[in-house]
Image (cartoon, rainbow over the protein chains, first blue to last red):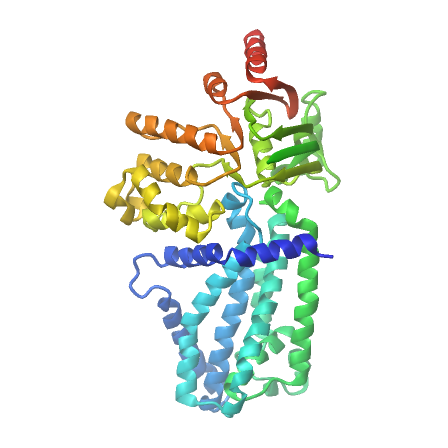
Length: 260
Length: 250
């Protein structure tokens, strides 16, 4: 039923050499001639994690050995999620030059954004490793769950990105709206705080899909296996989300060259 | 190898100018204008209007017409970049569009890396690019410069590189927009030869140009476009003569 969209998706995946190259080139362009390159992001992320850890850990009266890895790992994955979504908004718009000159499959520009941010995430992952080495995990046996968790996490980020990129190409106000909404979401998602600190308002976290997404990857690393509810919510999000993304793609794929 | 167009129309939306008052202003421009509003209230320009024709193996078609006649839009439709707003297009064979000579050039990558990037964008496989790398390098005459980043290149050197990659692709159907004068005189001659060679390899060539001479030399058919419609399509001498005559009258 999504023949056009699925055909484009498979052709895009097959063109992995192109999107991985384009994604890598963009990173290199951003950090041209800087010695540390993308590791500057790691450093700045490290500084943020360190300072927030000290300040908020004290403010909230938390045990730093538990609070710091919780918050640090959360922040790294939050940054992966939001940078994929935010930059996806511009995926088609910024590739207008390519889209209007050659008939390449279109979803590859989305995969390019995903790949670029995944590479940056790998740099930031150094912080996660560091936190794990220093503070350890409460329960190492949950670690293997990280792999399916990360896959589901990225699958979700990509469908949100595809929907955002497609609609943004037509309605140029959307990137601003999305970035404002993500900013807001940051404050209601348990990154700087923990669910238990909310007392009678814990429902804020329970009904927050972003909280479930974070649990998916942060849980296995810190020794808290994601709950069945979390697996269910994020799995359903991925299925329904991809269905929505493919439906929109099927309908509007042909309009992309006219929109950008 | 063939291209068949059936009642193909293309409406280009102009999002920068939506709004009803603007439409009224534009509607006053003349009765036969091609600017209208689609049902979202977006201003659209009818760039191609109900085109039907077919091209077979061996056709060398010159696209002629005034500025804004729809030549470039037609090339984009043939290339599969613009899916028609209405009507159908059927194509078979590997289509390579050479519309923009500076497509996919990265300033910080070396010449060789740019060859790969542009090759991938034009639909070449990695093996094909590796296979042709040396031939491309030789043709550009850039020597050791190929290992320097593109930002150190002069504009002539860039053109050489872009031209060499673009023309290395094996195409069944080749689409060309305004063949550009490349580099200095000695290179021009080489470029012309290579262009001819490329056109001889392709089974169908569609070439948009304002130069009568180029069209007559390279093509056996001509398609005269006017305001998004086909004014005439037939043997190159006949159509270009007609076209030139009309130009003189106007």
